[in-house]
Length: 129
Image 1 (spheres, rainbow, N blue to C red):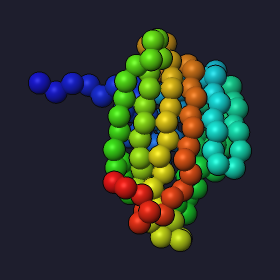
Image 2 (image 1 turned 90 degrees about the vertical axis):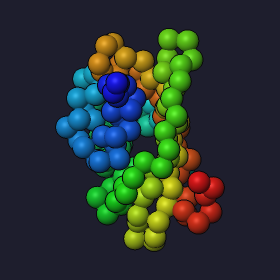
Image 3 (image 1 turned 120 degrees about the horizontal axis):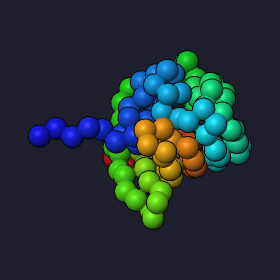
Image 4 (image 1 turned 135 degrees about the horizontal axis):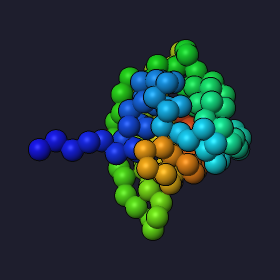
């Protein structure tokens, strides 16, 4: 018996595919978003800004090709969902791994509250699989 992917699994799959439409649809239009990457803090209160400015506009730019999801782990912390995922990414400098840890809440099928912390781009040769 196949189970439907969770909202978190669909989020990671859409991010890995750089699927703007699905990512935006998974976020509530007025999502409460904050994130920390190695170079800055991010805040937004609308799905389009999160996807276009942060995720696809800066974190994973067009020249960076996500080649796959290396691993994904999920769980719960009270009412919040927890999600850790590693992505294989090819950049002009070679293969890298990006790991992110996310905590989120949903209002059904959309993420209404999202916090992400990113480890940054690490050369694949330096990362334990």
